[in-house]
Image 1 (cartoon, rainbow, N blue to C red):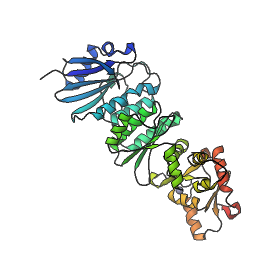
Image 2 (tube, rainbow, N blue to C red):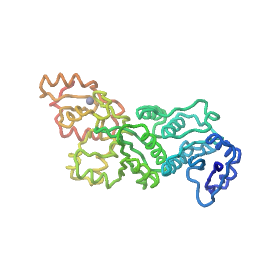
Image 3 (tube, rainbow, N blue to C red):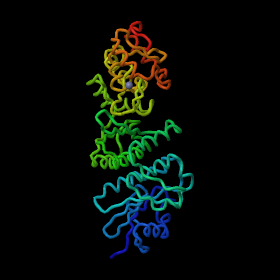
Image 4 (cartoon, rainbow, N blue to C red):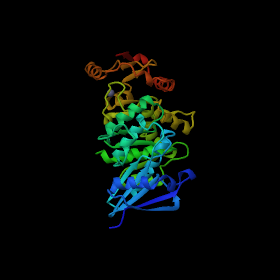
Length: 389
Ligand SMILES: [Zn+2]
């Protein structure tokens, strides 16, 4: 039986990152022993291309082991994690059924136990990654996520402390399809890739990944995209032409960018009027209705679309409240207070009163942009036909 054999693409961008200097025999010996139980190994440094994912492979007994090494410098949180998803993609591309993926800390310099780092370690483990030497570097052992709801809850916790940093959202639509909305620009693409592959391992739902355009980049890197698609995940690119077609063909506007913007502004799906949080029952409701935007004469098509997908032009409502809002049984005053139509039957009004918990919209919805859309909506209605709840 031959010895375990490492293959390491050596050429890296900086001279200081030549792997022949970094991956000493001691380090490789440690990796080899932890994976195979053997101390002796052979190694090839391959100088033909860039090392993607700070990656080495170790072949032994017909098995292929992928090992992604951490960065030394923590830098920004995204630079620490940007190479791992590329390694994971390479691992997924390998057809050998006897394959494993590992992560190895290389004496990182800085705090590697922030909430975000721990969140990312847990995603990596959820995606099947084995940490080879975490006990030397982390003060506790992180666990993989068991359920998507855990990922969302943990994510929201991080988001609360770190607003504006999150780039991707996870939710479930009315048909029970799990939807990931991910940006494709800069470091966001790495997070979107890792999130998709981790969720794939634990969700019972069928999955859709929406690539939300930002800057000029519409799509994930091709390798990542191909791997995600090969798992049966439906990948949809949401760019302006997609939104345009959707806007022109439908008054209900099933726009991924609109949903993304609502998630970004309002957080997870939750009916503003009854607090229902069952995602299959929650929809994005337009304040200034799409049909009314379409009928407006003095603005360009691009402006119309911008208004239709603006996160300020909406709120989360359950099916029932959405329907009642659309047919103008409900009215919202500029102060965010709810009114019911006076002409509603008494028996129906009692039912409506019983399942409507909130008589005011949450204060964080009532931005100046929201109020502008509300004014456009209310212009078409007669407030005198409504009374306070
Ligand atoms: Zn509701």
